[in-house]
Image (cartoon, rainbow over all chains, first blue to last red; front, side, top):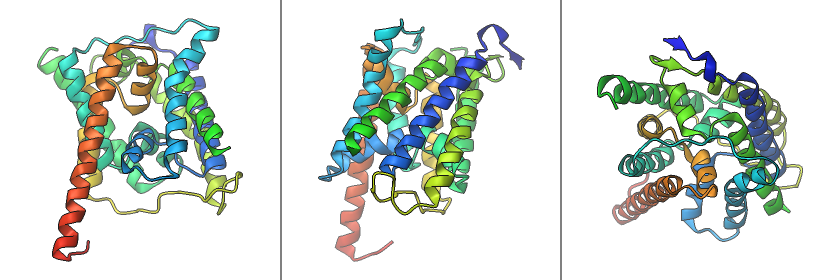
Length: 144
Length: 148
């Protein structure tokens, strides 16, 4: 392991992280809900009346974020080097996996870890671990 | 009112993701590449989010209703089962393949990126497959009279 100091951005990472935390805080304190993106989006498929509005509103806020950002500032580099086939497979795995696992980076990683939920700690360790292994295999074993 | 606060929470969440670098898949992959030249930034994203979140959830945990008077929906499940572990395992593989998780996927969609759109469509398809499998399972259960 060697740390890539040139790309290390501690202050924006910390500030952005706190922004995510503030959003999760507002959501639980005002709406009484966990800001878990996979749960919010996945819940749309249940088509329950009275439950669709806030889900759609949260998703709309997320999708609008880059547009609002651009009103004040140019977007930072958002670089995707993955091909379409691999992206589609990855998206499928993320969709199915987060629903079976009841959460993703936000629901388990941020909200669940904040609540010290044992399920979320286990889930976060598992998806971080498999994330590390997957990148290792793609980049250093199969040579990407 | 609840829809407006949900919209705002989603917006702030998305702006946080962009500022943090989480919406940049190349940066996420550089974080997951611990044996290569590792960019530890995203550990601080999680640290910052949890620092704020833990205060909010400590307050929320003591309340029956939210400040808008809505019921508190905090997860009560405590069982660490096969679904949780295998689901998270599949999610981790997908996350490692592209460096994109659900929140950043929706932000990337908002930038008009065709890669983001492909990922989101596939992710929704995956969630839809889950929903169909779950429903067919509950139909089977009601036919045979089994309860889980």
